[in-house]
Each structure stands twice: as structure tokens, then as C-alpha cells.
Image 1 (cartoon, rainbow over the protein chains, first blue to last red):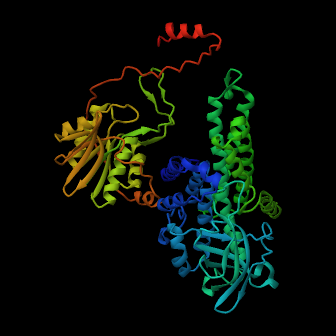
Image 2: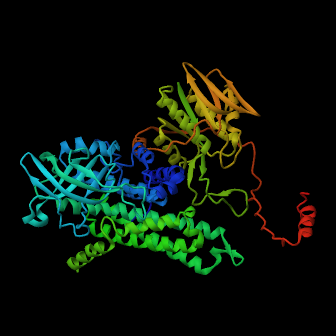
Image 3: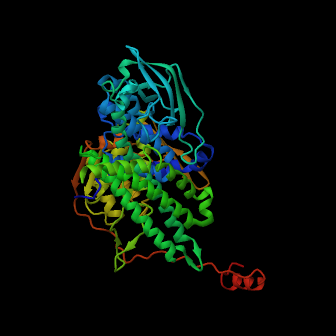
Length: 381
Length: 247
């Protein structure tokens, strides 16, 4: 067993850290306050190759391993999770899905621009009445021979307005239940698509979350990924990997709040000495450090399993569940350590706390992760 | 036009510096190494000039043991084409400049860039020494570098203003802030291609240091703030006068 990072992994972590600490930090509060999409920063992410860093170089990606990806997401999330979620959805849902399950023609046409970051991608699974219960898809993809006719509404879509390419999960054969679901590659500019208003969210306010409506949208048959009825399996397989990105994001949110708390505790005095010298604060920091280390290790293990082509669904569910819960706890305590200062925007920790909340909800709630974990336990023991 | 950038491997600027028990050397245990920030700006300008089609090849060079290689590879990832490590210990500015000069005689370049100082020892002397040893013209405090045709246009900061000048090539330019705005962050493609770029290790002839370090000290701790009661103005005036001696 080896816990050392390679020189290359460290270089990637440093590149992400430099980008986050030099660039993202500058106007993160303003972007959050006014829900401003980080257009320029996403361009830089693309130039640096972060948007397609996991994709094979033959499809214009960075060819990096999942460990590097986890390290990069963590560094960016220490500063701004609205940016890391764009990166995570593009890499681990959209690019991953296309690269692993798409045809050569689909990869050539759709994966390459996404890996280069010329376009971003969105993953359209959730519906107004199908969140955690992903099998009850009401969006329909009617088989019309040469094309599918798409109708329905998708909710909570990250990059819903800015994305150039959608991966849409929809029901073709309702009588077959989840085995009748398909996944279609849909160009954002196809006639019949309406994007709803920007969601005014609690956290990650500058990522671009929308509902997307499909009204008789014609999607060419060749845009279906995999065999007929592969959609649900596609979604589940893709989300397995997506969880690693969100777990890494949660680790980053927690670590960002922790680093700010340590700095504050060493500077701020109360009752004649630095907060760090008060056991009640020092013990909080100790607990934070342990939770973050645990979360990071779970996350790295899931990433390592994925890189070794070993099953990682159980590990990624554990990582996502634990990291999200840790992030929520750590950020809440970070606000507490900061006292009144923690409750104002200038000190960042209240924003990190708002961001942490979402990691318990999206790409599979904490409860869904526990279902995944407990089913595996039921099988194995 | 080929550019060579001299790179100093320095501890990350947020490192908490510790000394060995005898206070005669720095304890580098657990230190994160980075490209000296001024050298990183020099490298960034070299990359910008190459991207603009004004320069052909960028080489980077550093003196040190194998720990320097990670820093050199970062420079390759950022956009340098070749790296050279002179396998020797950088004992002081003189030994560093001597090793660099020996190596540069084997690997000449048209423009040799050095950061104005290193962020660890702040010696500000390698660039000047190197130019002297190579018998080349040198320009210090360079804040802007343009290549036009076969010649270069330089701006340097001087007291109360700026100076524009040209120089014959090859030349050593000692660069400072302003030469580039933001240091170049390596891209994924850059990190990937750095795997296959050449990193040569060359052996060095023995060079003795011309100076020795007797001891190190950390700066004194900031003294704590003393509060004077607002009713007690006389005490404040007395302390400012007698203790602080500012009035």
C-alpha cells in the first residue's frame, strides 16, 4: 500500500490550487451574492484542460487519472463549488458517459468539443417528480423510426442554460419500467427546447441551474447511447463515478472551511489568549481534521478503485455519503468558531456552509447513498 | 531566438521556516518546493514570447540535487521545451553562478533570464555574476521585454521613472515584477507533454563557496499591543515620548 502522490498528481493539485487561490478567490463573494455565472473562469478551466481532464487524449482530453481529478476538484472546491460542480458534471457524468458508452461517431462529434471545453455538458435525469426515484421517468422519448420524439420536463439541471450538449434520460417503453428508459444526446439548440428561469439557490449560487422543457423535440436515432433500453443502466453507471467528484467537492468545502478556521483560531484572541488555546475550539479543529482526513481517504480509495478498473460503486457511495455529512458538520462548526464574523459573507465560511448542504442532496442524497451501501452489505454478508 | 531561464528551487512562500539545532542551516524537512516567483514570471514571459512566434526554444536550468527535478518538470509543464539540472549543491550565489556559467557555455542561448532575487536567500547577485562570468552584457531590473526582428527592446525601472534600452545579444536580463502579470499555470496538456520533454542532468566541476553562513535568526516576535485608558492622555503622551520616542 502506498499513500504517496506521484509528482504529476502533485503538479495537478498545485495547478488547481494556483487557479483557485489566484483567480477564483477574487470575486467569489460577488458571484455568489448576485448569482453570476463564472463565464471567464470556465474559459480558463477549459484552457487549462480541467473540463475534460479524465478523457483519453485521443478524444482531446487530458488523460489524467481519477486521483488527480479528486485532488483538483478538492482544491477548486475550497474556494468555489459553483465552479467545481460545472467541472464535475462535465467530466464525470457527461464526458465519462460518452467516452465509456458512446459510439465512435458520437465521441468524435460530441465528446471532443466537451473534452476540450469548447462546450460544456449537462446531465438531465431529475424531474419534478423523479429525483431520488429515478425509475419513475415521465419524460418520454417516443420511437419514431429515424428519430425519437422527446417530451417532458427536467429539473435542477446544472449548466442547464449554458451547456451546449445535453444527455437526456427518457422513457421509451413505459410498459418495461426502468428497462424501457433510453439516454439521448441532444443539442441544446434543437427546436422545441425551452429553458426555465435560473433557480435562486441557497448555495452554489453562481452555477447555472435550470429546469429544461422538451416539447416535440426531434432527436436523431443515432444520438441514442447504447442499445434500446440502456438509459437507466447508463444513468446508474455514470452516477457511480459522479459521486466521486461530489465527494471530492465535499472534501474541498470542508477543507476550505477548516483552513480558514485554523487561521482564524490562531489570530483571534478571546479571554486574553488565541482561540486555538481554548480547548473547546482546539478540540473542534481536531475533530474537523479527522473527519476531513477520513472523507479524503474514502474519496481517494474510490478514485483508486476506479483507476484500477475495479468495482467502485460501494466505495464511491461511502465516500459521497461520508464526505457530504463531514462537510456539513465541519462548515457548521467553522461558522461557530468564527462567531459573528462567521455569519457575515466576508469570512467565506457561511457560504461554504450553504454549499455543503447541496452535497448531501444532489447526485444521490445521503439517504440514497445509504441505500446503495446497505444493499451491498445485504448481498455480501 | 532561444531563451534560457535560470530557475531557483525555493520553499513555498507559506512555509514556516525552521533552522537546525545549531542555527547554521535551514531544516528543509517537509518543505514544499516551488519555482522562485521571479523566475516563474521570467519563464511566463518566455512562454508568451514563444506563443507569439517571437522565440523558438525555451530552456530552463537549475543547480541542485534530484529534488530540483520536480520543479524543473513543472517548468516543462508550463511550457519550457528542455530542462537542464546541474548536479551540484548551490552553496552560495558565487557557486550557483559558476555552475550556471559552466553549463550555459555548453548550452548557449540568445537571451538568458534570471529573476531579480530568490525568495529564500534574497541574494540578488546570481544574474550579475553570471553575466560577468560569461562575459556578456547584462541589464538589471527589467520590467518589460519585447523581441523585434533580431533585437530586443527592454524597459527597466529606475528611481522615479523608466528607462528604455536595447542591448547586443546574447545578454543576461535580470527581471523583476512586471515582466509578466500572472505566472503561467501548467495545463493538463502541458503536464502530459512534460513527461516526454528532455531533462538533462549534467555533472559539475568542483566550485568552492566564497562565503559561509555563521548563523540564522528568525525576525523578533511582534510585541503585543498595550492599551491606554482614553482618560489617561498624559500617560499616552509620556509613553510616546519616552518609550516609543516618536514625539
